[in-house]
Image (tube, rainbow, N blue to C red; front, side, top):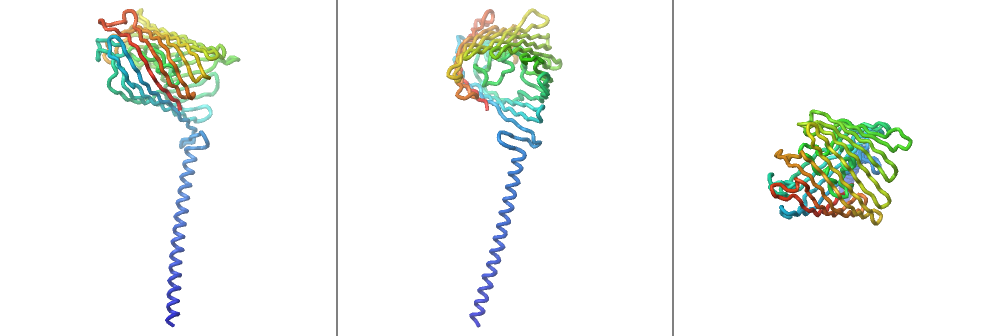
Length: 393
């Protein structure tokens, strides 16, 4: 009898334990199922709203998003007769470009530039400014919207952009992406202004930009028209334009203009440009002149940049000949008159291990001429050796 009772108790204990184990297993299975469903929901959400197939990114509104940009860094050594010899890693810049395709004809284009570095203060070695000699000093950092516009592209003849972007004036002003320049920063017309934000031309169009191809059989003639408020007088809208002609696959030329109001007068910029290439040889050249109302002074700039490609374009050697004259230039910080007339000339080499990677080494002689050669006995000339790298992605 006692044996029967013991067996019964033992059997009931096993049954209870099995029931508890079964409940535990069922609970664990349910938890696993819930986790799998949550993971699937996350994956589905991530796929539907962000990555819709290879090389495609989508916003919450299911628009295609294209992400890219560039990074540039440099080290520069400068030396001259009335200044200390200096070497500095003065420039680090990151540009992020985001484009949203809203449909086949409409897209939003943006580019944000973030840069930090050690500025070259008193760039033109004027003893009447502070510091009294050209020098790298301090550290600056900033971020700005370099481009941002909504674009409507219904066809070849008429396309419309609204917002802000690089002006289609000549070659250098509209090129602007660091990885494209053989010399860091491009020609002098991009690197100098007259203290009022203009110099040769105001660098950004704002408002509207219309462009397209003229209805010709070869589609080799195009135009640009845009609005621009100069930084010196932002309450008066100006305008600019360009007409270009692709003569053949080797030669492209164009003429440009820009008109705007300044604080004391108005200006009219006019330019002509040539882009020639044949085989491994080519050259870029621009000439621009700026006439001011109310005086006989005019600003001008030109450059000539021949180059030769080696080893299937992975190496490029080039020469710089560049001139600028800004007779009405003032120091932007102090409004002290500081006119310049200078040229630089030099040579350099580029190595492109990839089409989107450019490493540069160049030498430049900065030569101030005529009455701007020196101020109060202080010479302004200097030499520059620079290494830089630019990467597009």
